[in-house]
Image 1 (cartoon, one colour):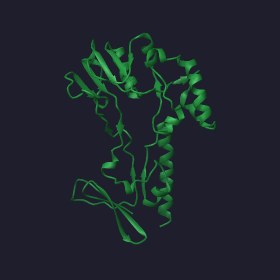
Image 2 (cartoon, helix red, strand yellow):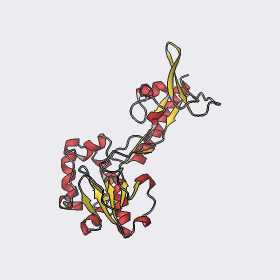
Image 3 (cartoon, one colour):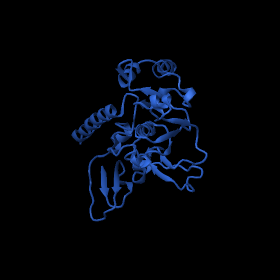
Length: 272
């Protein structure tokens, strides 16, 4: 049975040789909770990741993480370097371009870009329909189809990674869903550049991603593994929801995981 008490860390207590108890401790020592189940649904974007970049500490211009970006107004009329071309970086660069700034996207590695719709069909529906095909077939077919839909982007500084789309998704990296960034790159409203060596633009926005953050209070020996219901999660009574982002969409996956976790909790409760 999980127990929630005071100091911010989780630990495992054994009341009998066969029964493990999970003790999650928080910052307030005056209360303790003993829930039968714990669901962690804080998401993969709980904490901004700020990588070590060359000369960033010496940079005197405006610098912020994408988590703190709210509007383009402070950058209007200026050149801005957006470091990282995930979905967040691509959309921030587009917002800057549309509002009168001059953004450059720093693309350290190759990136897969897909349109929101492919020939009138939502891209997530196509992803769902293609799941029955072998991954190797999908990874060979998608680049050909995407070149037809978006054009060849290498001449604009955007290259594809060696890993295929589905292979990258399995590794936790989803493709960029284009909402207009490709058009802006083609028209010159957004520039693309390789990895950053030094910072010369007046403004820098670090679109360098996030981490889940639950490792601060959940030690490795108590982590249930994958998001959703696993054998270990069911044994511990401790579940992760919303930490797996498949190509079919995060919100859809959260719904599926929530239903599965609820059913497992009901099964465990009725078996007591």
